[in-house]
Amino acid sequence: MKTRKFHYAWMIVFVTFLTFLAVQGGRLAFGAFVGPWEEDLSMDRGTTSLISALSFVIYGISQPVIGRLVDKYGARLIISASTLLVGVSFFFITFVHQPWQLFVLYAFVSLGVGGASNVAGTVLVMNWFNKKRGLALGILEAGFGFGQMLIVPGSLLLIQYIDWRMTNLLLGIFLILIVFPVVVFFLRNQPKEKGLEPIGGQQKEINPSMDDRPEAKFSIAEVLRKRQFWFLMLPFAVCGFTTTGLMDTHLIPMSHNHGFSTTVTSAAVSILAAFNIIGILLSGVIIDYWSSRKLLVFLYITRALSIVILVYSHNPVLLLIFAALFGLVDFATVAPTQLLAAEYFKNYSIGFIVGCLSLSHQVGSALGAYVPGYLYNLSGNYNFSLYISILILVAAFIMNLLLPEPDKKPMTNTESVELPS
Image (cartoon, rainbow, N blue to C red; front, side):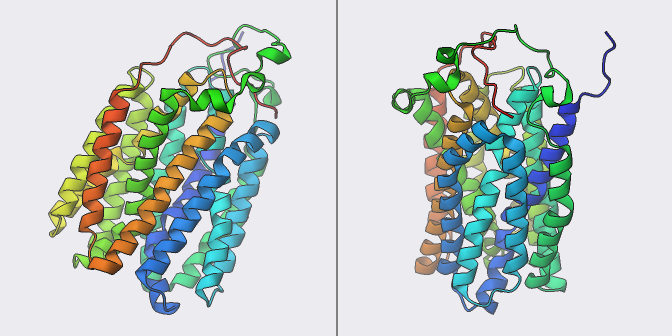
């Protein structure tokens, strides 16, 4: 049999990567709009933080539901519809003139961002890859990093030289006219839709009975009794608090409060994003060969150390050092967390489990967005929020240290998750 030089699974990875870059990058640019919104729409920091927090709550609540919808209808439909929803929402944000309009439209953005997320991406990787799953997950997660590196500083510069409304309009048009058609035409749920087997080959062909299907064995009560569930969920909430919540919402205004110019702030965001990509890709490769649990232990304690640096970053050099170190461990936690979830809960609905993980992350993100904004209104600085972040990161480090190593035995078809197309 002639060996294929290019497997369509990598096209799936590329299309999903592009979608994450555009959709998640647009959401990660929230912090770039905080100042312009406060000035143009007469809002304070607490109100803009509340918009971010509520959007994370909506995102989070949607995740278990999204997971079940992906299980039922396939990732292609969910990702394409979500991409279109985010694009249309950004388009209409261009025309808002009242804070309540921003609240409503960002609720729709959050639903779309929740659909074009790691829940659907993880299911696609599990369907298309029986080998190199860590690398594939890492590349998908790198879409977040590239979005952060390109769209966030790009939005900052466009806002400075044009205005925030035109920046939103361009984001919406890009999603509607470019990204959405690419997803519809190229994304596929299962290798069999292209007459292919997954990378790594198909496992032993067994037709499981209804009682052997993951959905048949699925029990929420049984999952909730497992220590692995909580020791993955709680650290992932801490991850959300300290990354998409605190940093993606407040790092830009925090830098401005420290007296840094837009140029220095953009450089810090770009460096953070560049090292984020490196960290994501390294994480994806490492977990194919090393313990995901041990990697998470290292990542959480390193993130705590990076925030210690940020507390004292009152000159550009320290800010850039923080950006590099934090970026290296920013989204690098996602792939090992997802892989651990797939290994711990391989006899259950992976879409639902990853959805719960994402819910935990977004609850943490909501708190990380709102609490620092509220404390800023009270104190005029972010110091207490940074101290809280250090403490909870140490707690996450301890919980991951106490996790057991998962059973690494190969999965048969009765154990793998084959989702409907």
